[in-house]
Length: 349
Image (tube, rainbow, N blue to C red):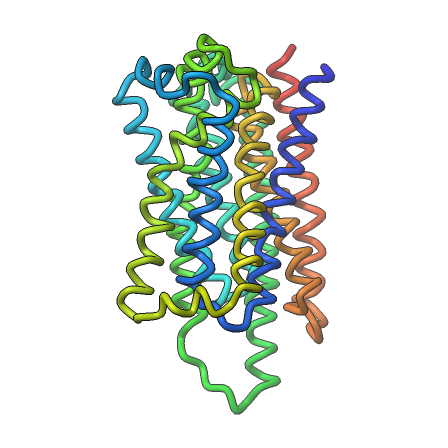
């Protein structure tokens, strides 16, 4: 396996781990509601950080972007908008069904959509040369997705079992249907979440070429892609929380909790880093990078979410089948990512 491809696998694994564990600051908040931490963290992650890097490290960024097809930018931001909606739903699902189960279902559906689509409808740049779905590499990657879905099935069984056990242990707490609603929300979020990878994959070629033609280095050029395509996600993830704070007249809560502002900024930073890593990792993986890179990130995102769930006490006191199922899910997910990496190697031959 070429060193560049191996590095790409490591980078995408790191992206998934960081994204999967990034919600830990939310568990330390006591005063902020969704709209407060989402407004600050998403403003930083989707606008301030990527545009700050782009304007500082990409010479003549706006001149470079002026030559990029407007239709391409619109399509990328529609993908980003879909992902932005998925993020709103996912954050709400954290509170309804927990981090581990949310990540499990969301990532399985997102992986299936995000891995298969670029092999059918070719993306931009190097990704345009991706093998077809019926090639040896394509079928191997498809097999990896199937295995990943099986792993998430066991993660879902574990989540249902954990929820039932908690209801049994707490007879005084009536069921409000929140779990069922949360489950429906996370399924929708999973479908829309593929927009994260699509926004980059289908727009990166022309944008990176334009930035490099104006003197940008490789990494800033790839980050510039995110600064442009994340505008759609920002439209939802910044304006919606702002609307909620206006509706609830709770803007004053922001300034009264400096510690939680800091936690929100940390979450925003941790939220942006995986995008930068995902983009770079995809490019390093070559023609199948849009598919395999996204799949590996989704798999490690699930694992990161499970790690956070264990560390934060979501599984405290849970024994028997639910805990066995989650362990089985983790093993299967590791196998699935190994198959995806092998499929990418086949594409290199």
